[in-house]
Image (cartoon, rainbow, N blue to C red; front, side, top):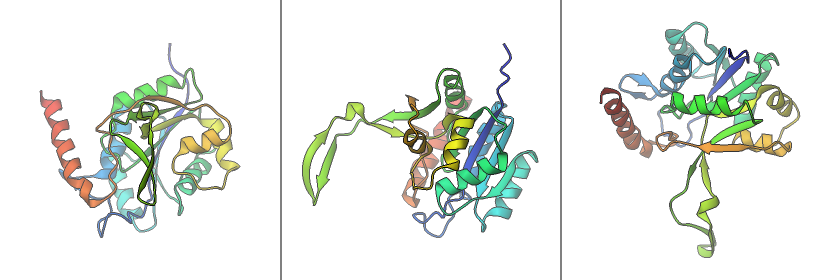
Length: 230
């Protein structure tokens, strides 16, 4: 059966990289590829989306526009807002309400896999949303004033990743009626009473946050190349 659902991906690249020193993490290059290019290319090469929108900031707009044009002139690049949700809302308002399925991804996660994208979209056939989560293996303790208060059951804890997947029209309406600050889109979805389904994330789907991550990222890239040529 042909899937007639219209799908759109929003890639967020508007952050100010405050924890990344003088380098903008979206433009940092690994093997001559910008981080944001690596993220977007996976979505584009999957051929799963009717539209891809990249949200960037004022200072990087022209450079990211050129990078996206090098992938495809069909990729839209727009300017976002000060907060994450402002950037998502800008993209949703730019797109209107003509889509069915939505993926929202942090551009700073360049090792997202097509398999993860397939999984998330497949789950939208049965659920309102689907987000990848990676189980925590370390011991977790609740600490106040440098004193351990209690241990937390790690079996119930997951590191939440992106891309996060939603029924488009429900998320579109949610963003029109929400102004508080959230750290991810699933939190907003939960606020309006929707159930958020979690599926298995991937260890390599790491988010580039600060300069100390660069060594890990370059190692991940080498591992990815080794798998491709095995």
